[in-house]
Amino acid sequence: MVHQGKVQRWLFVTLLLAINLPPLLLNSFPNGFTLYSQLFVSALIVLALFIQVRVKVRGSNIVYRVELWNAPLYYKTVYIEEIHRIEFKRSSWASKVAVVRVKKGVNLRFALFGDGLFEELSQFAERNGLELWKSKDYQTLEKLDRNRLR
Image (cartoon, rainbow, N blue to C red; front, side, top):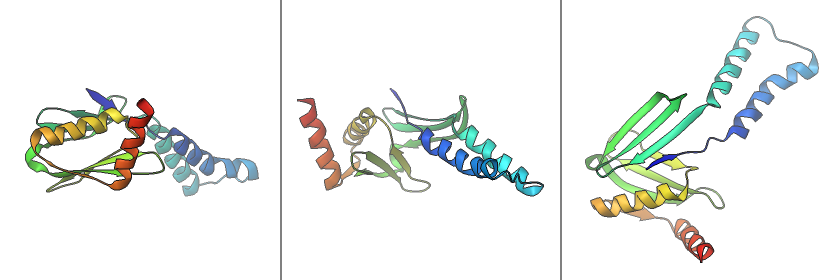
């Protein structure tokens, strides 16, 4: 199953307003290099609104894709042999984070995904004999989620 991450659009909109609103309110429009840099940063923020993150957990690997309008910006496949361990942590008050620690390269961090991905990563680790580490805070969140379902 393909899991899709949530992009915090409110953060990008806030950044866009913070960059473009002060010159509009003060009637002091930048010129020259400042104008071009402001337009460039604004264009990058607008493009970031359309970024999607997708993760697919397969039998022997994890596929991680960052896409802009279905065009891949970043693509990584991590195989069982490359994984050191999978860590589950708590990010904020009620948010879960999973970190796939790899032996060489960049670790994969999964935040703002549905609970289905975390359950699937846990099953993936148990099925393939990988080291699984869960913080006490994460275990507390799991207990709370189980109690809510009852």
